Length: 109
Length: 113
Image 1: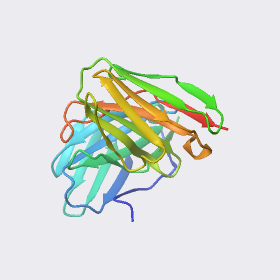
Image 2 (image 1 turned 180 degrees about the vertical axis):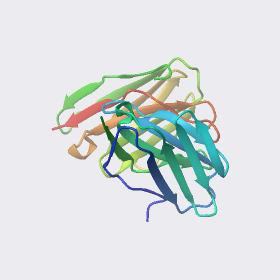
Image 3 (image 1 turned 120 degrees about the vertical axis):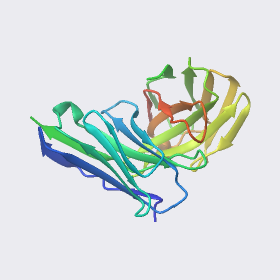
Image 4 (image 1 turned 90 degrees about the horizontal axis):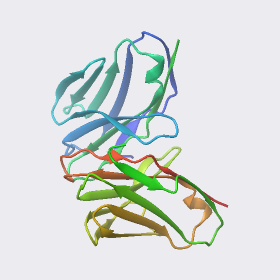
C-alpha cells in the first residue's frame, strides 16, 4: 500500500464548477501538507501549504486537512480553463516529501 | 522556477553511455534534490544533498550517483544509462528540510534508446 493515495483521474469539469481533489494517507506522523500544480511539460509549483488540521484559503483555492481521517482536500471555486493541470498532493514529517500520483484536471470553457 | 535551472532540458542517448544532468540554483538554499517522474509513479526521490559534499540516497537511487562541489550546483550522473532510466528528471531546492517546502526546476526530459 502506498503511503499517499491520490486518484489520477482524469477529471473533467465545465468552467465555473467547484472542483474537489483529494488524497488519503496512512502515516499519522505526517505534519506538513502541500498541494502542487503542474502544467504540462513544466515543473511542479507550490499552490498551498498547511501544517495543521482545518481549512486554509487563498483566493479561489481552499486546502483542507483532516488528520483524524488522514485525508486532505483541495477545493477550487469558480474553476477556469487556466486551472487545467495536474495537481499533486505532498506531505512530510522528517523532510522526506512523499507525493501522491497526481490528479489531472481539465476545465472546459 | 524560483531561481533554479536545469541543463540540458532534453537529451536523447543510447544504452550504456554515461549521462550527467546539472541543476543550478541562485537561491543559496542548503538542500537540493533530484527526482524522477514517471506515469503511474508520480515523483520519486533519487538522491538529495544537505550541503557541499554531503549527499544521501532516496528511494530509487540504484544506477545513479550525485555530486555537489558548490552550494549552487548539484549533478546527477547515470554511469551507464538504461532504457528504464528514460524519464523526466526534476531538481528541487529547499532552505529547511522539514518545514520548508521544495521549489522545483523546469525538468530534463531524458530518453535512453
